[in-house]
Length: 160
Image (spheres, rainbow, N blue to C red):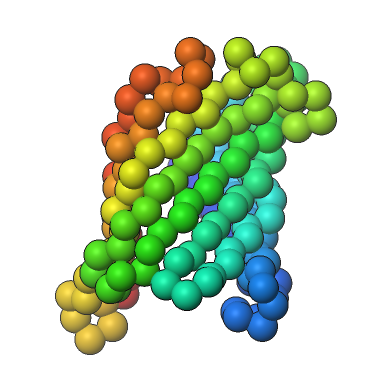
């Protein structure tokens, strides 16, 4: 039987943009993998953003948990961060990083954690009256032996 959804993501803005030194949001994501033995994946956590001049900094702390799995799993803590220079809407430059520290309440030894970071490009290109392509791309490098040595990360969204 075909499902009504395979993934659902909602972002909630909890503070008014620019009213406080840090804008606060919240992410809730639910995903149902094709392999039902993997159960459901839940991801949730705070989204933090601050701006100072032409610079923008983001930090997302996300807990990921699989439920209804063939084997029980612990909730894991991951993070995403980026710092970018907002030069012009079509081209911004910065750095970004991603990682996982293991179980949220009992971090794995540093040799078992994954951490990657590197330079990135961001932008938004208008393609119509209310349409745009939003992109970001990064060349990320492993910061420890457990992490991939090199990663190319590309993301594009079509807004309409």
